[in-house]
Length: 590
Image (cartoon, rainbow, N blue to C red):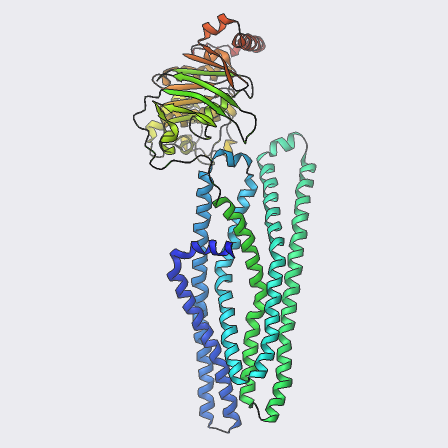
């Protein structure tokens, strides 16, 4: 019940429409209850040998009541569907907005297929609740109360006997709802797992085929699909049995009415018109009672789906914007890390008491092995994660004191794994600067050494990029990502091994362009390629989350420490690759 009450808060803004739908439902119910009264009068008219015109007028009245019931039922159905669609629209958007705001710590553990299932199947279950379940249950309750009152007026003993059986039907519906709730929760969880497997296989189809793993992946998918099938069959079995049982239980009162009511008529305790009305009212009550099976199924799905959606909506983001956060404007881009420590999920610290200062416009190189903490520094600066201890400042301002939007507007990142959207090249370049004109887009592409390639395409900048940029090579994706970042003109630039996927010639061209572009911009370069960071103003050498060496290239080489070892090793690898491909030689100015 708590979950349903929480979901009802989304309907508040549409209470006028919901009220109109409720009025239509009440009108439909009222006209439905009038019809047995008119039929009873018609039977009385026939038995009393009254004028034929009276019977005709009663027939017209029945037709009119039926027509008005149909019109009001249409209004009820249409308005409830409008309310359900608008409400689920709000819930779906609230869910999406929440997912957009949740920190990377949440997304590191969440599965894409699981989240997609919650945003689709679970939201659809809630739509069914608002569209058919909510007012449907209210109508059943109103019909039960109204018809019970009318039956008691006609004959109390017969009414009590009838309501006892109908109460048993209601109890059965409630019991089935409790049985179906965990089944539907398992179904929705299995659908999420199935979606995850499907999403992973579609995304990694090249890897699957490269390792000839199609059969194993098909078996994995089929296993989950079989489990989902079994749970659906279990739910269908319960629902079908419940509906059949209710249909049977509803017929029992009719038999009792004919037997006991007939005796009352013969005894003079009840007249024939009254018995006719009684039978019609019980028949009318039987229709919504039979719908209880459908309604309980909707409620069970809604509770399980609502629980999964509210889990996300109630999740607190680890990275929060503090009240009264200020805008980060007129940035000079001086960066200071002060005793910064960080760990993922209470695991071993990824960074340990890291301290360094970067003056505005300086080029900083982060060097170290895998897992040394280089990328973690890049993630902490735009507050993708919050530090475990210590603080990070830009121009002396703690980044936790500024708005997230203004902070990330001033920190541009070229990720190691470039993500492109299924859109045109122009749209992908202008992703972070939607108001950029074509001249600015072309300038960014030229700076990233991508313009000539784009011009060689039949559709130029309007060329459609496949999902995740699959129609482009790794080097082209990297350069497009660089152009996208440069277009927003950030005060601080972070390049996470951004030239690792390009050939030596293209890498040389990109570095030549970046030599001009990084002037006046604080730049962090995270890379395993040491030749490109020889001219850095500051080199930070990280090992196991600690800064073990710092200084310029010449200073670190003179110390003959870890940096010297890494540099000599990388240099030998570079020389070997040049010997294998002499045409790949190029000057490393950056």
